[in-house]
Amino acid sequence: MSESKLRAIIVDAQPRYLSEQSDPAQNRFAFAYTITIHNAGQVAAQLLDRHWIITDGNGKVQEVRGAGVVGEQPLIEPGASHTYTSGCLLETPVGSMQGSYGMRSTDGEEFRAPVSVFRLARPNALH
Image (cartoon, rainbow, N blue to C red; front, top):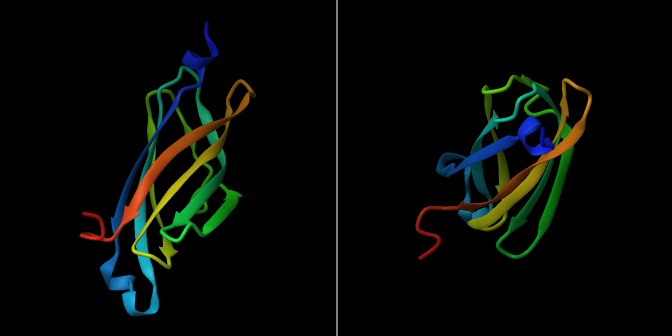
Protein backbone atom coordinates (compact mmCIF):
# COMPACT_ATOMS: atom_id res chain seq x y z
CA MET A 1 0.00 0.00 0.00
CA SER A 2 1.41 3.41 -0.86
CA GLU A 3 2.40 5.82 1.89
CA SER A 4 0.22 8.55 0.35
CA LYS A 5 -2.92 6.44 0.88
CA LEU A 6 -2.03 5.62 4.48
CA ARG A 7 -1.29 9.20 5.54
CA ALA A 8 -3.28 11.85 3.68
CA ILE A 9 -4.13 15.08 5.48
CA ILE A 10 -6.14 17.76 3.67
CA VAL A 11 -6.16 21.27 5.15
CA ASP A 12 -8.72 23.95 4.30
CA ALA A 13 -8.34 27.56 5.50
CA GLN A 14 -11.12 30.15 5.61
CA PRO A 15 -9.75 33.60 6.59
CA ARG A 16 -11.81 36.65 7.51
CA TYR A 17 -11.07 40.24 8.41
CA LEU A 18 -12.00 41.42 11.92
CA SER A 19 -12.94 45.09 11.50
CA GLU A 20 -14.00 45.44 15.15
CA GLN A 21 -10.51 44.44 16.34
CA SER A 22 -8.61 46.41 13.70
CA ASP A 23 -7.35 49.99 13.81
CA PRO A 24 -6.12 51.00 10.35
CA ALA A 25 -4.93 54.41 11.64
CA GLN A 26 -2.52 52.50 13.90
CA ASN A 27 -1.54 49.96 11.20
CA ARG A 28 -3.34 47.21 13.08
CA PHE A 29 -5.26 44.74 10.91
CA ALA A 30 -6.81 41.75 12.68
CA PHE A 31 -7.68 38.51 10.93
CA ALA A 32 -9.26 35.26 12.04
CA TYR A 33 -8.89 32.01 10.19
CA THR A 34 -10.85 28.81 10.55
CA ILE A 35 -8.88 25.70 9.71
CA THR A 36 -10.36 22.30 8.95
CA ILE A 37 -7.91 19.40 9.02
CA HIS A 38 -9.35 16.30 7.33
CA ASN A 39 -7.78 12.87 7.60
CA ALA A 40 -8.27 11.33 4.15
CA GLY A 41 -5.80 8.57 4.97
CA GLN A 42 -6.26 5.08 6.33
CA VAL A 43 -4.63 5.49 9.76
CA ALA A 44 -5.44 7.86 12.61
CA ALA A 45 -3.00 10.75 13.09
CA GLN A 46 -2.36 13.10 15.99
CA LEU A 47 -1.53 16.74 15.39
CA LEU A 48 1.61 17.48 17.42
CA ASP A 49 2.73 20.97 16.39
CA ARG A 50 2.25 23.86 14.02
CA HIS A 51 4.58 26.05 11.94
CA TRP A 52 3.21 29.21 10.34
CA ILE A 53 4.92 31.68 8.02
CA ILE A 54 2.96 34.94 8.06
CA THR A 55 3.92 37.63 5.55
CA ASP A 56 2.44 41.12 5.49
CA GLY A 57 2.04 43.42 2.49
CA ASN A 58 5.46 44.99 3.14
CA GLY A 59 7.20 41.61 3.00
CA LYS A 60 7.72 41.43 6.79
CA VAL A 61 7.76 37.77 7.83
CA GLN A 62 6.74 36.31 11.18
CA GLU A 63 7.32 32.65 11.97
CA VAL A 64 5.18 30.96 14.59
CA ARG A 65 5.98 27.52 15.98
CA GLY A 66 4.28 25.76 18.84
CA ALA A 67 2.72 22.65 20.24
CA GLY A 68 -0.71 21.72 18.94
CA VAL A 69 -3.39 24.19 17.90
CA VAL A 70 -5.31 26.42 20.34
CA GLY A 71 -4.07 24.28 23.23
CA GLU A 72 -5.05 20.95 21.68
CA GLN A 73 -3.22 18.05 20.06
CA PRO A 74 -6.18 16.23 18.51
CA LEU A 75 -6.16 12.66 17.29
CA ILE A 76 -7.95 12.64 13.92
CA GLU A 77 -9.41 9.31 12.88
CA PRO A 78 -9.57 8.25 9.20
CA GLY A 79 -12.47 10.06 7.55
CA ALA A 80 -12.79 12.55 10.42
CA SER A 81 -11.93 16.24 10.63
CA HIS A 82 -10.81 18.70 13.28
CA THR A 83 -11.82 22.37 12.98
CA TYR A 84 -10.52 25.32 15.00
CA THR A 85 -10.34 29.09 14.73
CA SER A 86 -7.39 31.31 15.57
CA GLY A 87 -6.11 34.69 14.49
CA CYS A 88 -3.22 37.01 13.74
CA LEU A 89 -2.39 40.69 13.48
CA LEU A 90 -0.75 42.38 10.51
CA GLU A 91 0.62 45.89 10.03
CA THR A 92 -0.84 46.01 6.50
CA PRO A 93 -4.36 45.37 5.12
CA VAL A 94 -3.14 42.41 3.05
CA GLY A 95 -0.82 39.50 3.67
CA SER A 96 -0.59 35.75 3.50
CA MET A 97 -0.09 32.66 5.62
CA GLN A 98 1.27 29.21 4.89
CA GLY A 99 2.83 26.47 6.93
CA SER A 100 2.53 22.91 8.11
CA TYR A 101 1.41 20.66 10.91
CA GLY A 102 3.60 18.05 12.52
CA MET A 103 1.65 14.80 12.67
CA ARG A 104 2.20 11.31 14.10
CA SER A 105 0.17 8.42 12.77
CA THR A 106 -0.96 5.69 15.16
CA ASP A 107 1.56 3.33 13.52
CA GLY A 108 4.33 5.63 14.82
CA GLU A 109 5.27 7.45 11.61
CA GLU A 110 5.90 11.20 11.95
CA PHE A 111 5.23 13.45 8.96
CA ARG A 112 4.41 17.06 8.02
CA ALA A 113 1.04 18.05 6.60
CA PRO A 114 1.48 21.17 4.44
CA VAL A 115 -0.87 24.15 4.55
CA SER A 116 -0.99 25.91 1.18
CA VAL A 117 -0.65 29.67 1.10
CA PHE A 118 -3.85 31.60 1.77
CA ARG A 119 -4.50 35.33 1.54
CA LEU A 120 -5.42 37.64 4.38
CA ALA A 121 -7.09 40.79 3.03
CA ARG A 122 -9.30 43.54 4.34
CA PRO A 123 -12.41 43.78 2.13
CA ASN A 124 -11.87 46.09 -0.84
CA ALA A 125 -8.11 46.20 -0.17
CA LEU A 126 -7.51 44.36 -3.45
CA HIS A 127 -9.05 45.36 -6.74
